[in-house]
Length: 98
Image (tube, rainbow, N blue to C red; front, side):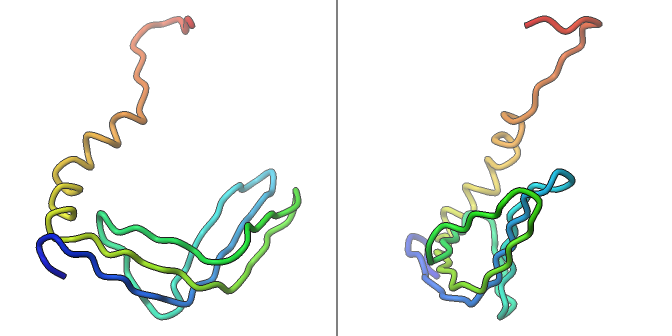
């Protein structure tokens, strides 16, 4: 990995999609122990997975990991906290008004 170059890595993975009242989630677990770092991108290959309501679907797939360059990784670490704050909504009033 260089200052401006990206590496590409392929990894077998297990995808779990839950569409239940108690839990609505999608998780990807890398079967070879690959770790994702700040700035990396992951693409899971294969057709779309749809879980019917009330079920959990698990499938084995292949993932392509696009490793961030050193410069992208540094930029992500420096600006990551600011981007997370965009998801927060704060209100200090006693009444909620829209």
